Length: 608
Image (tube, rainbow, N blue to C red):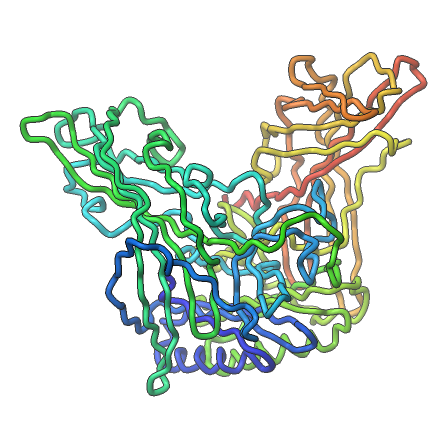
């Protein structure tokens, strides 16, 4: 399943083996090299690196698939105390990490349950995927389809099955993976549907019967070996049938709904629901990897019984089984907290020596930063060019000796459009629409935003905002915000009216120069909602407070005509949407105010 990826997890000079492998590939076949990524941290007073090399093709030997009736050998956990380093999918509380990845919890606490990939050595767990990284659709794709007759335009059944990961609400995703707890029910994280390829579902233009469902869990293990200077991978797959049921579910073309990218129908989850067995976590070590996949086979046929159209449709979903540590609440144990990320963008000609130059440049920056405890470097090829983005994690604000040249950041930056961050040149064009990056929501360019200036903000009035819609908009765009605002009002405060809400878009610009950094703040007032409607809220009593939640208190907000969000070596432009609540008491002189905000992205609308 991950046959195009090679993992390197080693102590001390851990980039050496990675660079040797990548350089050998660039010399042998530069078009086969796609990208690589390196995470480096100090763990137990020793340097560790976790890297992954992404190639278009890799020498892979496939072992025969073994169907297991007994799952006792399926998904065994490795020995985490053997001294090896591993990338492990994990469920943890924020307090359990060696490094607390977020500067401000923002409606979370250190007891918050999170799902993320960690570099684990013994009991130490360092979170990964905290910096800017390249997007590899194959590894993180939510939906994968088998190369079967369903792809054939001459297929008698004009439907395509779709398996989609739905993140459960009880935990917060940090890494862009399909995290699942061992033993989970499929209905808690999986949505299966059919996408119509035409106006009819089959050649007969008849209704369709879903008659048989098979759900199979596949465990994919791979072993990295070196033969004659060439790295090969030996893969083995074991499978276990979770469900094999004969069913009766009829549906017609008119039942499909327009989902934006086509007409889709979602059968009831009860048709395919079953439970996963108890499984060890998804992991990658220096030599061995284990991943999981769910395969769903669906037998469909039309209802013209004389000569019915029939076909077996198949779809798969990669899942990451998370290891669960002791999740009981308790005292926080974070060794240190990340307060700022420093990001550097570089370009190199595609050549073997460029990899050593990137490593040397990254290490030289890390050594000068006395407060740096780790970094992540993402390198990706684009024709004859290598793009390198390094994100350094620091525990103190870096206010001087900025490690850049005056001309850095102008010819290479990232702006957002079409759901991703794309590299942009100084001419204003994006270099390659096949090359995109991910900026994680825990990236902290600065310690915090400057909230709107509010007169007499009352600490007794607690306020949180949950923004349920997309947090991306074009300049001048009118948005339906889908906001839920919760106010915790002291029971002793008598008020006659519902709150007034005002919205602000806060702009924060960070300039980096050789002399240090300069921060600029702007505040855009974008909408004055007036009072909310009485039928749009709920009210409960908790302790000595009234807790009121207002759902979608405004119909729309209009985004100001501002410059797009941007990241480069010398400039970061970020936005946050704030809402100010004003609550007037029965006595006109009594007024309480509070404020809450959510990160917001302004798209590069010229390229949307």
